[in-house]
Length: 495
Image (tube, rainbow, N blue to C red; front, side):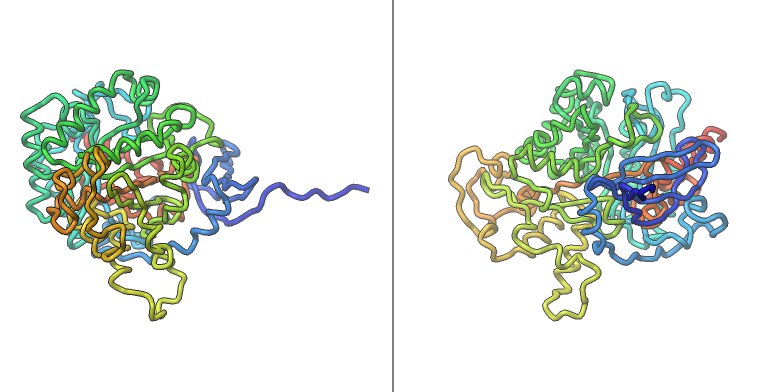
């Protein structure tokens, strides 16, 4: 008599994805197996595919309530014809407005990184597109039309610092009322070009600096050059001299630089220019390092390594999902720096209580002002390193002993290395607004989807949008996986 066998996995939900080979939209399953979450799918033409989607099944279930109802944009740019993800623009099926807009100003780069979702490089210095001032102005105006008063815009590439009018673009965004403008850069020009750095400092742009680690092997395998560290450190020191604010951005690949996660945070906590770190598990879109999609890094993998490598200074349970996108996409915490002490604010205030959107919103203890503050901080539009964000946290935690005016006498503390007021032994009550922000440090990990992990449900809630030259807005992961990037590049080449 034959015996029935139990499956070794649990079907959690059905969704839609794409075939990694032909990019057709196909059915997909979210599966729990051996404590992890996988996405499986079958293309009629190219067969079966499976990838690790999230490294902790229990955490995947736990974070479900951190899913804030979306906000409708003021304007949609496309109609619904074929269904998500084939009608991007945004279309009325999209469930969220744009917290963060991205404009890629060029394709040329001064590096040929083995890992590059933009597929940029030195070979595109002559043949790649380079946006005009008129195109960029139209794209910013389209962003404003859809959002009303957008607060965050990032200029990217290619290497955007190579565009001859990048300073003009940043100034244009400033004049149009966008409060927080970022430059996404590898820092090479900042390290060596005095005139450019002086002009950039005048714009008050925030710097999103590529920084994958300290080892020569890390930089060789991810960026194609082993000797980049000195350039990155020089760029950071020069940015600090200009009082410019930086978020370090590290692409994390298993077996290459996942041992450097703690070191990157420890370094950032002490450097006066660095106000946060953004970890991005490597995703296989456009140009990427060959790797098994079943062993990819995910958010829990990054945060557990951070916990281990900092000896619990920062822990996985210090992080809360960002609710404006899907909870599996982005985890954030903020830490207070006081002397040498580093204390995540989630250990002081139960942030999770307020950002759990399945809780009863009529509970009297729920403070609406506090909720609004937390929603500003736990958002893709959070203005990391800004005076406003620092003031939000200071107001929120006012009266707590960790933010009281305690005179620090320790020498060479983290706070003194970062903060001019602390170096002068001034209490927090006498800090200048710019120095108050030096006591706040953000750590973020964002997991972008690639053709193997693409989930339509997540794409429909995306709040990070590429703005295209025809005025459309396309979700980040959709733009890089479904074929929109190639369409835009072809459109620009024809002009």
